[in-house]
Image 1 (tube, helix red, strand yellow):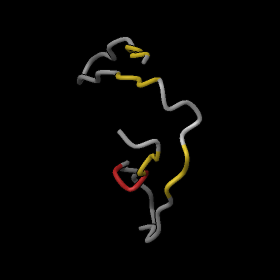
Image 2: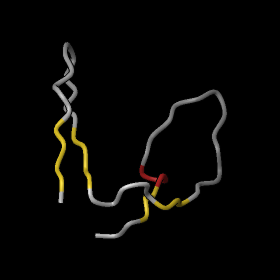
Image 3: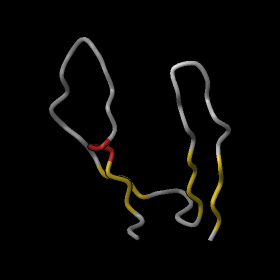
Image 4: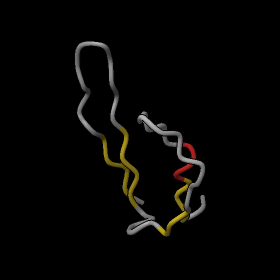
Length: 50
């Protein structure tokens, strides 16, 4: 598991199409967060600690 976040995988809808991305160092590489989304609700975030 890498400690670099690839923000190119994140989709952001806007009026213009950005043609750049940047990789940044994570603040805490020992925590992952998962959150589920459906059409009518948001599941609670789940935290996974290492």
